[in-house]
Length: 573
Image (cartoon, rainbow, N blue to C red; front, side, top):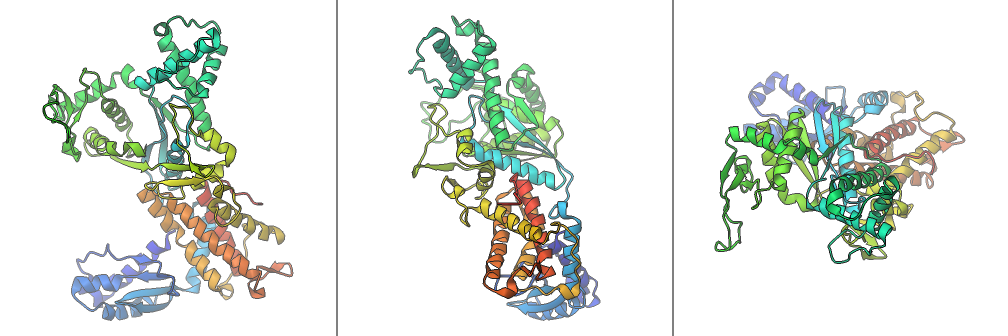
């Protein structure tokens, strides 16, 4: 129930149905006409640019058109007052009758208030960390971002598959397996762990080795090559269990885990290339040297090449290394071909900051494979700057001194992590300050939002009534004060916030909105301690039915919003 859309359509229809506007609106593009919240210094509910758009299109005075349109739309019982501002903006107040109707509609459809119903099928791939150890804080942001995007799309009625791509093939897995092998030798044979082989030295490797020994105490450690395949599979299984446990503690559960080794086993690369070759999108040829590469030093080797420039990429891409083996991109091409065959309407990949340069080629690949029928959207999550003892703390899985998700959860709870990871746009670096997320004040956004809900519950508990009890309410009760005006105007923005957050895949808009809504409520609460007229409860009774109706609406939005974020809402704090 987006009142901005509903009332915009009413305004358009009023103008379209009036004969005096026939010539003005005939065959004109009305898509640029918008209805939005007016600036804070205007005491109005809505603002419309219809007079400016029609004036520009017809070379007429917007102010004169605004006067005519004002006379038309003021007759509609949804609007009570209209003012013309600036060059021709129409500032509008919603009528008391319409406000009451909107409030009742929100209460009636509380679980879905804000939802913009869609029926599309999405695959969202996120986290996809190398299965060589537990998740660290750098993975945490993309994990929360992908999960909340999924929740947001599900809230809007879409079908979503949350997918994790397991990179269980390649050199990093060989190094990981060798690291586990040497820890096994260290535990069983007392052979010191090598310090000069570029292995993973983290203590979690010891934990994995101990689990393998527990299951297979008689494991032979005389030759890595003899047991490498089996050991690798077992080590990856334990590593993925660590990752899944970390995700569970963050409140995240994937629907599907796709293993890279499946690409090799099922020969998916060649199957994908056969299709692309038919369309002459994969050819044998030579690539030009990269920009800045010395022509004399460049060795030109004939390879299979994907013509990604045909789909917006900057360069065509090699599918083979110099030794003839497949590139990482070839595997990714096959994986996305497999996703396309699963008949999704949209694919979304959540990437780390180091994958920005990869977006054009994989987007081109999906366009080619799907023949431009399926859209791939890539969202990059920038780095998280973690502060420890007042200093930035660097993370490295290879060195074993990274901050794991488990370490983070020992310091702060899941709710704080999830909310704060979305407290900035994904394209901006995020500073995660341990001290700030532990404070119980306005500087801690998640606490401030949760406290708003707890305070509302305390009011209803004091009155001994259910939070969603039907409070009789009529037009005589609609006498909002300044705080209540701010609150109801903020409340009707919620569907618009959900719409933009869904369309642009920007869940941080939800955290910003919930914090702003809670801030207005807390300000109102504080004024009640200073001004008797603004107290919510006097002598054990409601001071204003209007206030408590609004508090019910706020609680609905907090429940829906925090559910999307995957953050709890305690009734008491």
